[in-house]
Image 1 (cartoon, helix red, strand yellow):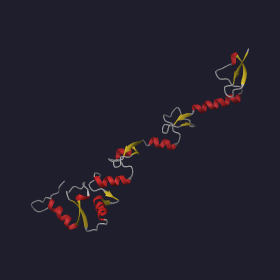
Image 2 (cartoon, helix red, strand yellow; image 1 turned 45 degrees about the vertical axis):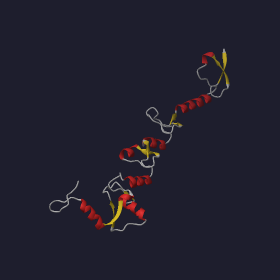
Image 3 (tube, rainbow, N blue to C red; image 1 turned 135 degrees about the vertical axis):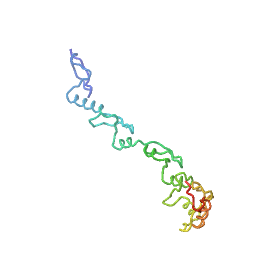
Image 4 (tube, rainbow, N blue to C red; image 1 turned 180 degrees about the vertical axis):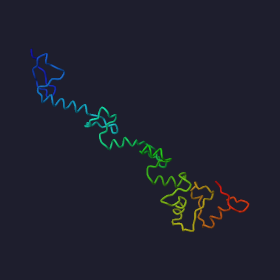
Length: 197
């Protein structure tokens, strides 16, 4: 006795013996081939581990691979291991390589934030530079509206080189500047400067 069933691919009605009916039934080899191709395609569908987009994996190492990526761009971004950090000057959140974060003490979203941080805090070093010019000279030049001459130097009134506020800075000639610092240094019995470490 034959039973009427539908082809699992095209939906065409076919008649089969009860003993010949399987889990999936097809009216022709063409439908069987198309169904197998679709089944294999669905087996190759993977989700990108970086962007979450579904894509068809066409490689031959799906059993060996742990991670799958839709493009080399996503693979590279995943491998660089970027992390979200906050800018130390403007508090804007941005992405930065984990290795760069571990290597640096401060994080800045753009060079201008780094320059401003150096200018007003001075914690980036004894005499941080902005565009190759010591920060205290740069601040004084911007305040005066002119370039300092070679004979002019900027003196920190409280002798703290980390305090670059304009109230703590004064322009002196080289001789005046060296005279002030000479007075503050200790000398030995022979009048020689003692090296202060």
